[in-house]
Length: 261
Length: 345
Image (tube, rainbow over all chains, first blue to last red; front, side, top):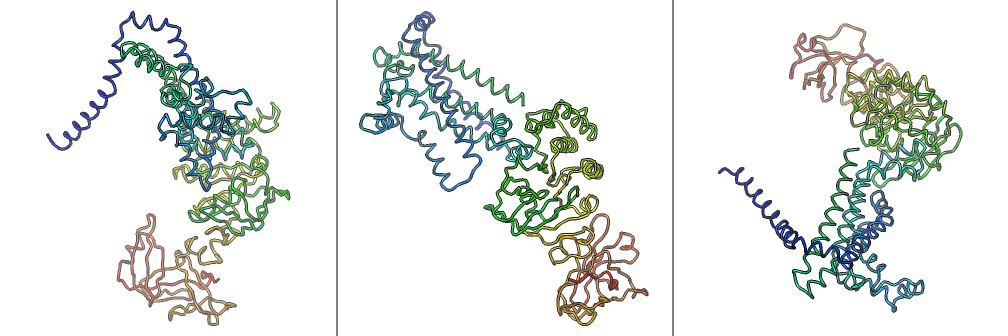
């Protein structure tokens, strides 16, 4: 065996180990529950509610990230200013903070002892134990994924296209909506999917802020704690199944957009 | 008329300093200069795409210095053409009309006219990624001209084209400029483009204008050492003037006129320096004996360096002259040039 072949086999072996590492637990998770058990689980109103809440709150987080994050991503992609690196580090902060700490941090500003919490309370907005709280937490953890992907997308659009558009009579806003955004659209969509994926999988921060109403990961945890592995697996199966369908559809959308130019 | 008055631009990585320039209405004007001289920045400043620190930009007497790009009536076309990749050719061409009040008949007329002039009829439903360099360029021209700008800024539009195609596009540009009545300001560092397209030009170096004027003047009578080097006057020397003579390192060169300063520069185009094996019996007043220091192949001709005392003169010779005269390193030769071919500055 020459060096080149050895190199190839080492690469192949490492790829096989990684694929097995990811796929074996997933296959086990998806094949362990029996069909009657899966049918019974999906008819359970509590399970349905938690699955819907997971998808709904994650969707809201992705939508908020898209709305608030797009201008910031564009600004970071197109401007240079002192302190830009610091802002980018701040945006990445939710990725590196342990998840329960995120929950505690959000509660500490949304609580009664903080002026923000007092304002929210005066406005009738409750964070602790509410859907609003869940969406807040999921947005917090999902935002960096959206902003970074969208920023890369905007950076990939040549500035010259915008300049030509302006010289042809388009305002900055028209240029953004007609040229920059459509061309960065794929990255923006990928960013939204990443944000959604991150939000759907969040557990640690949500469990601190809102154990109830129960999102799917919290329900899986609760069933595991109360009844063991066997009863948590079917809920996990349906959450994974839903996520796979959702991401498959979104992924197809991005591929379609890519082909469409 | 376009007037730039003491224009200064400060970008992080580049500065334009005190640029003043005047371009007539309907003129084809050329900006020349080496890479990184500031040509594109100057175009972008005129178009309003980079902020101006100081000075004024006047178009037809109207001060547009602080107007946003979309209000200036100036189109820009870049070297890479910057077509919108997600639009078809037709959508690219028509893009600018979304932002101008042009009635339907006018739109159709302009579209038809440009499509015919630039021979784009068969490309309308294709995307830019499927077009050749020449096709991209024609689409970019149509897109820029459909909005009837006062000025069209062209940033090295010919540099990405293959040489066989350049001449055709040059002719098309001249025709288009004459027919459209739009002022064209074009950046190039190709002398043949400049000579065949424009009457007047300016040379920019390091963010400042070195020389503005007739292109022939710039080529024959550079006003600075930089411009002399830039336009290929390879024989450029700092000299002391004595009566009608320029003295370099012991060599006395007859210039045929007196100069108003005691020192300065002389420049001689290499094609004006004649090499021979014997002293030439001609009217040329400057004849010197020297030795060939090097001969370089320049494609269609050869460039010979002749050492006269301690001064090197560069001469361009043909391949047949190279063999006929047996020009090679170390051979003793004579060089000659007319006093009238010497430019003093």
